[in-house]
Length: 311
Image (cartoon, rainbow, N blue to C red; front, side):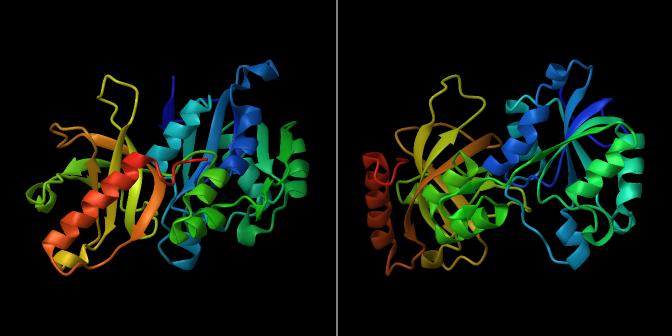
């Protein structure tokens, strides 16, 4: 059984990995791995990732926090890792004011019946982030709970973090994004009807409606790989994606459009998974639709040639 649950409906008892895990990047994976498939502890435990929604920074600062992995996407990655369930704890001012002792006793012990807790070494918890991993270990010991502390994970540029990934996405540095995540960055969304301008130019596009809380990369044109859960073939379809305001046609709202190369068919109301492979060029305004059409053709040729593909 696999589920997205609340502390009330979660399967118990649990072996938990505790944190926000936005991105489920390589550092997060090291924290989650010890509890994935928790049967190796010799107990009947449900491996559970415990996270918070909305993001605590959004509640504490009042500023909207866009996510690398909204809950449904995060759940899919955790399922692939062998985790039994994603437990989402509603984060509000009441939770924010719980002290470290109360957080462990009320949330981890009473609500989740935790027997094992895995955290990163920089994990902080409780009111004003007063609790450290040392505090967690001492408090958890009162209930005989084992705490696993994972060292920080580094790459050539330093610590692997969600903030680093956001910066790389803003710069269009997709090789760096893949190094930090351990996989390409992905955008998911249902295909909706657009203005169908691409069709009139000879390049029909699928307009994706991505979750509003999803962090979007730099505006511009990308080569991408497109997956559709409904396709029988397992190989992705190459494509070219445009993300931006479409200044050539005086667009005012950001849109995400994907032209699939060497493929045709009806995609309306279907969900596409789009992996970003390479950043081709920034968004720009063209003098005419003919100039735009010529550039789209060039973008397609570049994508097909494999320029900028993963090393």
